[in-house]
Image (cartoon, rainbow, N blue to C red):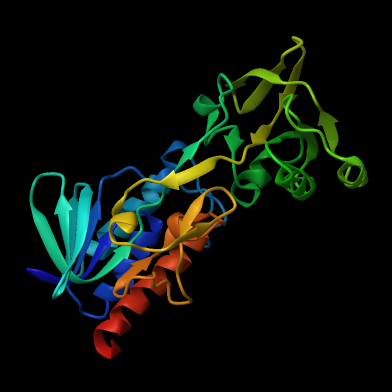
Length: 297
């Protein structure tokens, strides 16, 4: 079967794109391996109408709604390779088969690499997070940490101060300059230069242990992870990349089309700011763009 649109990645951006195309009565296939980026978080926040729900519950509902359309297809597997053909694109699957489609939407997401501090990975998505708009309210009203990694960490600490009492941790590697320190003081942000030796979470609280043995109790900590593509398909197809705030992102236009004609990208892989709401919005535009290109070229 030749699909009109193949969507690689069935999380928030991918399903949003697929829904637009399938509602246009087009044959749409979603390929997904079942490993969404926010699988470590118990609750999703800031997504209109779904605030506080479990991310997987939202995705389960979205898959059921998509699958109810007669021209919808779902493949629970991984896409391993892609190539352009005369009729569009051919996608190789990890089971050895392949599928073909006229248009391709990539929504494969990114994976996170965290600083090598014992306990940090275990608390990722719980008391350690990257987005104050997603988790700041839940951390708020108490002590909040921001782990410094570069000059942008000062910016994040200044922002996070709206959610609670903030301590910027230099972790033995970052020291604000005089101007940055002045800005931090004006926002009531403290600064701790000592390196962290470990973090531990329990009952919604986070304990930070410093290299000198002292500890600090926090409601949570924000950490800017470094991101990379979870899937090589965009690179295989020759899509252009650009530098994002936390790692490379696929370059797209205002309709989410990549530098490769017929290939669209959405979600965290195609923008620097990451949230469920933004992923859904980008996915919707990618689905609309892919559908309209079938008609107008």
